Amino acid sequence: METLFKAYVYKNMISDLSKFARKTLQNVDFDRERLLRRVGLSRYTPVKTTMGGFSLFVIGAVVGAAAGLALAPKTGAQLRADVKDKALDVLDSMAGMKAAGPEERARA
Image (cartoon, rainbow, N blue to C red; front, side, top):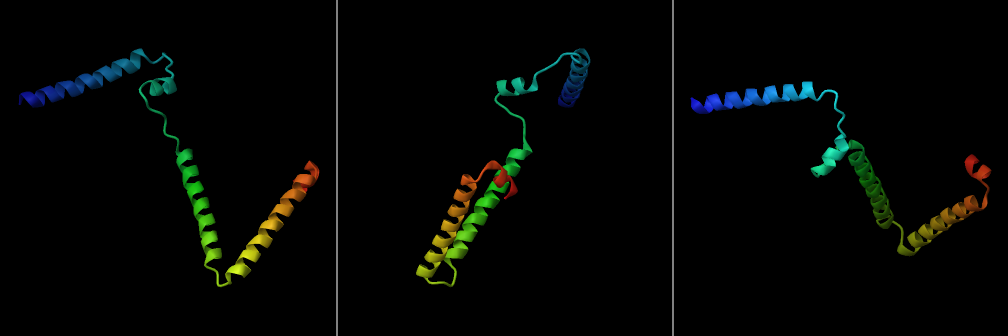
């Protein structure tokens, strides 16, 4: 019975203490970020986890595309020639955009 009584008293004391602190410290401005850093914590930002998941998706897509090219039913020489041609086309188009002025890049 004594343990139950102590638990009840402690619970009510903490509740009353939190109400008292809210009332008395209502007008005090706390810097939450500074307090969190002081105890070694940070705010939860779901955007970081979303961007991490998205970047993993993009990396997986690139790896999947590379695996698809590697497992394609073409011969090795033909596949290498196709990859080389496409890479050179991309480099040429990038060089063309670099040589073009900002007005032409905006139109492309």
